[in-house]
Image (cartoon, rainbow, N blue to C red; front, side, top):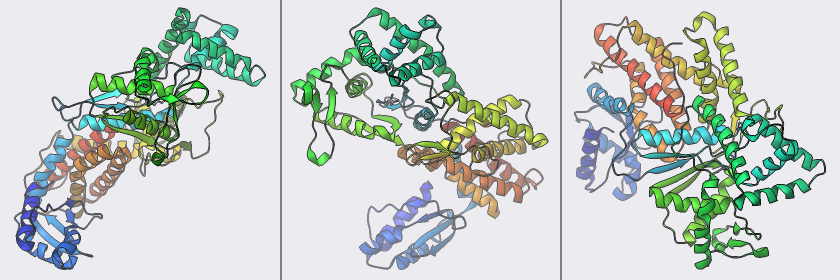
Length: 566
Ligand code: ARG
């Protein structure tokens, strides 16, 4: 940010204090009204220089006061240096924000970043909890992609496992049609029935299912056809939901894909003695006591492979096939231990693994405590989306004339899905997520409708002024308080998305967009735009247009959509 100022400040530190190679770090001020930039360099240098931070700050301020980019410079508090920049410098800097509204081209030759998310256990409909991995992952992948990374969006579907044995047994006992004809809901009914019967005194069904799955593992053709049909049905239904959520994948190799890729890994682990015999003939990895990790089971005593075995094979496959620079896997906090053990095992195998993070999130619950369902064991994601769209339609119709739209149905879809998604993404994923429909559908506050409404308002100003992409003026005499606050906020967009990407925290982008909406709305109420004298009008229209672009870009990075009219 502000290259010219940065260079000047670095030179100042060098000449005034004789310190070489210090680079002054400028940040946006923590509160509005404290200038455009601030630095804590004086506090950092105090020890080295042997002077009080305030004295150092005074000296820096005095030396920089004559800078051609600075309008005003002030020392505050314990030794902060606050800077107000000249209008022309600020306006010039907005070009970086403008550029940040366009996705960067993927840098040539750069190794890919694999982002794995959603990864549902299938043969049953997606539950509401699946929304978390799905949209947190999509938004993180979007951020990487937008910032010029070559991203592989990966869905690791659990299309393998004893649940298929159970389904097959249920189908044999109580099935009503041929396997291809079942809907996902009917498959769920079969699955639920299986568990009911087990609970009602038929535990032998479990053993039957285990055997059935073993047959599948041993290559039984009929069971393979069965599994393929179930997977196909599931994928059709998933595709429909993903589309509504603006979620998409490049690779959807599920667990079954690794069936024939585990043996070499098991061999390697045995040969290198990383896998050793555990209880009842199982193969396990033990970790050094200092790691605090319990043993990791790789193969069961009866020879059956596990979730861990497939993830090891998958790690190998991803590295060998894609040579990624990073692998990020978005999951529930419940999987933390599994991935710690997985990475520790890879290290013991002396695999060179790329940057890796298991991007974790907390639990989700509804503010009204409702998380159970009519159908039994899961709250279906689709039902929750439908509820959101239904509620949004009600909000739209109850607002009557104050909402302008040619297509209330499309707007309700956008708002209902958006409310759900934004309600999740505006909260810190590291905490438990509390979801409240009323809050999420409110037009005031940190919500999707507020964001949508503000974007539509900015577009409507541009329509009224009959301009599309007004150019940012090169200079301005001065700024009003609201212009200046809005402008400062707009300047922070590039660093905000960069930080949201590196920290894998989409909520920081959401919160930024919320603040931008507030600043824009304050500006909109205080300063006339379309009717202002020409110089002001041009500046204000340009700020309005840039606000609209930033809101749209930011919303889309969060998988949302915003309307031009509302
Ligand atoms: N299918 C798993 C589940 O729903 C999540 C998969 C996470 N990714 C992985 N590579 N193990 O619990």
